[in-house]
Length: 326
Image 1: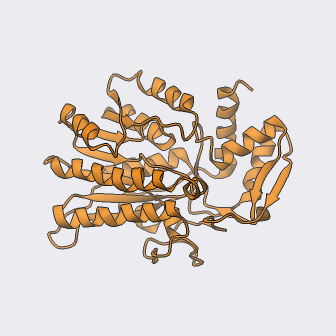
Image 2: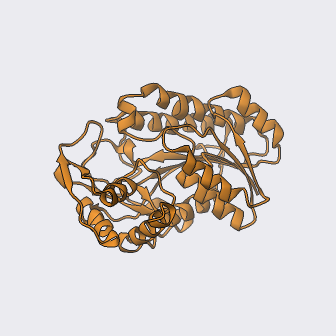
Image 3: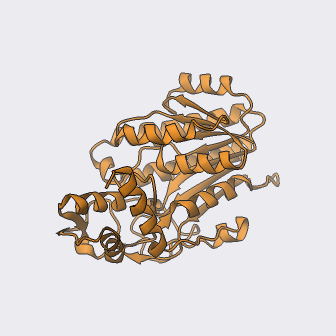
């Protein structure tokens, strides 16, 4: 299989590329290498991927139609797409809203147009987010729940991507599957996410910022489990019965909502240091709890997460210490 994977230098993209390459697939990686977080980390990920001869990297912005047309023309062998490139971060969307419409809406549309033009397209898989559930209080979150009340622009752009995908599946019969990721963590993780921020601050002897006074729960999902879900979904495109669009949505999480303070406690334990807490109120656009109902993805592709935070957090900290020479 030949896969066009966007966001290849990103956290989930890097690990997904590794898994695909390990089983013999060819991967055409695309990434803009923007400076939302340290590009040096992205460069290190690409350095690792580039050691495999089946990996090709092209630097491009997925919202740039001309650049992406060049990518498509250069790689007519591509039959599947995994669109993970996006502007991430709920809080950043409060200050840089146009970054989100650019990457998450326009960029997503450009990618769907590439798939539409490819007569050999077998599947278009893309990243959505648990943020689309907004302030839903029914737990666990189910793909059957209504998601028409987003509480952040980031969530709204991710929901827009789902709706645009549905229209393309309906109009052009492109098999599309959206994945609502739940709080992914692990080695090579993003520096703007909780595990990385907490570890960095604790080792530096600085206070860690904890919102809602620590009264938060998250469905923390280890990266290896996430990748198993992504690849399992890629291999099982929705069938087209000629009536309903070949379109699916899945939650992809650990199916276990953990206390934030327990997660922090594991980081402290692994580092052998206690954190100093800077407790703050709930932030705009944030939610108190997330919890994934994964019934659909379990049923359809056999997704079964196996990594509790008691196993995943030590693995992340081991990588973190090695990467930073601690």
